[in-house]
Image (tube, rainbow, N blue to C red; front, side, top):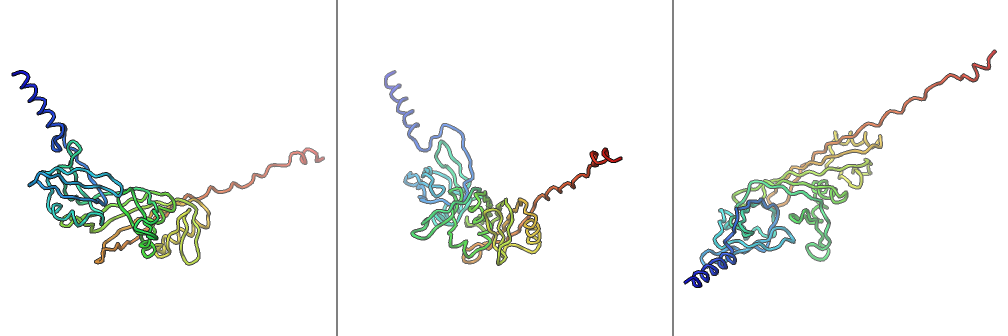
Length: 271
């Protein structure tokens, strides 16, 4: 009887070890921001687990067959994969996803990297933190994105974006973004402004910012320009970005006047 009992106990332990639902620990909740791909919905009816991959080069993760997909995530996820960024509250247990739900907001930060042929031959794109991408051609026609993403890529600066998510669809309804540029200012022909290795398009420089930038350029001092963008999504799905620039710099130290010392040698020689 002892041998049979030990055998049954060993089988029970083995079943727990190989079960995708067993976790052996507490739930771990994270907020996943950006795009996801290769989504396969779980099927509790046939006890078939699903899968999902977060990011452009992430690895597939298992979704438990009986995972909770909070509506409308249960129906909206298939149409979102590989496209618009979204925010998902993800619960994992033992490395297996047990719950997915849309979240109202999320933030991504990173240095944009220009990737040649990202979308095919001659179709380059910018990738940020492996979670979002922007076609390079879009920057050529959108000065707001150029001021935020293009300048960050040119200078190796951090670009940060916070998405507001429509919880009824999982699609972004708007966003706020920021890039900080540091360098000497040069006023270029045509109205563009160079800050270090970055160039701000003329259309994003308002009169107040231009006056401060012209002053900084005249002084030749290192200048910090904070680029803030507020974005909305138009009916075609394209971003409309309003840019605000905050310009700061330190005034150079005044050059001390030369001191006039008495000519003691001449005074001593005088009769």
